[in-house]
Image (cartoon, rainbow, N blue to C red; front, side, top):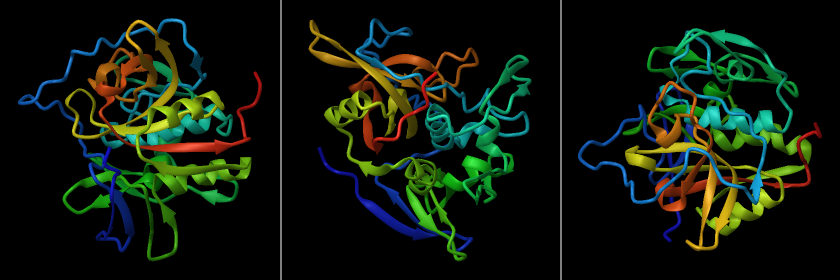
Length: 274
């Protein structure tokens, strides 16, 4: 498989950014001219799993603050799921009105200014309906021809590192873990999960132009001789934007994900025992 190729650009704010071939493009949409591949039979509930890490699920639309438009927030939301899995975020319960009133524990961090390990997540980035900070402000920037997307890494004129890799490293490195950009590889994903580390994967599932999700586990089907990958899809099951919170703990086949690249965590730092 061809490895993704990095590109460097500078945006209107003077940020120097790195993005990759087939980087996430938003707002998400279903390409009606190229309908989703439904030949792979993913399941809404996984069978007995070989590994299924307890990664909290956050919906990028329905578990984030009422004022926040999360349509461009798959990357930041995936990062928030990962960080909350390691026990590094104190729950901040908020009541979200849509699609019905409910309480969410970690969605506040996706959009709001906060401080962790003396690092303040106050950088501002635009959503479809105004500015936001937190995980979103750190991970997302404007890229020529792509719009506002989750970039891999970059540095502003003030020296502030932004992007998915700096965001994840800010939390993971104090635990003794490293984070790297990787070509998509089932064996690498399996080894990471076997070692207790979930994976963030970028792909083009179900007609989306680009999307970031969390792989939390897997099982092996000896009859089909393939893996089913257990996902937290922040845009809902089959990446359809559904309002019934069905994106957590769902099974996708590798070919359904249509993977482009991964963010892989390695090291001894593990979540706290419950």
